[in-house]
Amino acid sequence: MNSTGGLTARFWGVRGSIAAPGPDTVRYGGNTPCIEMRAAGRLLIFDAGTGIRLLGLSLKSCDALDMDLFLTHTHFDHITGLPFFAPIFDPRHRIRLWSGHLPTHHGLEAVLRDMMKAPLFPVPPTVFRATVEFRDFHCGTSWQVAPDITIRTGRLNHPDGACGYRVEFGGHSICLITDTEHLPGRRDPAVVELARGADIMIYDSTYTDEEYQRHVGWGHSTWQEACRVADAAGVGRVVIFHHAPEHDDAFLDAVAAAADFVRPGTLVAREGMVLTA
Ligand SMILES: [Zn+2]
Ligand SMILES: [Zn+2]
Image (cartoon, rainbow, N blue to C red; front, side, top):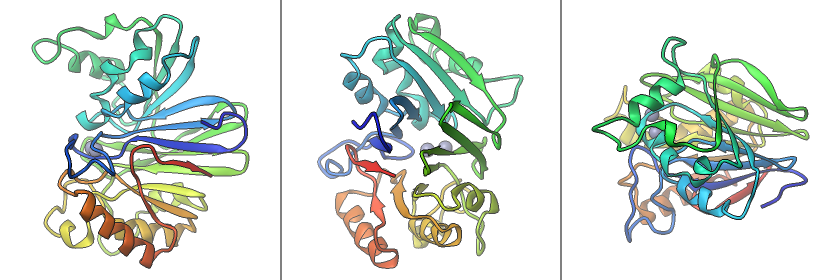
């Protein structure tokens, strides 16, 4: 993984809603969202779906890691991997957990306690051995996570709320915009603003436009809308993400071909894919 120059993203989980392993999803992958980004030697993780378990294994030989884990929101598909992320059980590591969609009276630490609780889960978050810090923030704010790395955030249109992220480093930027539902017939101004001029935009493409007609109000968007947002915001490359569990490899191959025709250079996210902004 590039750790000096550039801003890179590696995909460990690209599936939405629920993990979908099996012979028909083996090429794009069945794990739920987790993206590893690297800038200036820093480790930034986005979402803790089932893909984060594999990221944890890849970090096994690292000692004294200092990392930031940003959650788009706390629906199960984005957090169930956290108790299976090996570094969180290692006292040498420090992990800051960020979330921007929760009310102040019931922040991320409380939500995690609710999830890791009998009879849903056998052990509470107190079993974590790394130094874990909970950093709740108001979605829409921006800050520097390191002197040369800026994090911008924007509110998304999703049941229970969700927060989009934009990472800027060395004049480059990558956006993660999931989970979100678009506004029929017009672009969501908050999404366009967050994505404006980004080199790479990773976008909630759970449905096709045709499928979306049967899922209005479910909180997700389409790959065609990803292309429309990208055109409106002057985005470089679109990455289709948060694949529906029923979209198998053959279906996603067809989406890849259609999307590349509509907007050349568009990619369908797959596990193991690495991109540099
Ligand atoms: Zn999701
Ligand atoms: Zn969600």
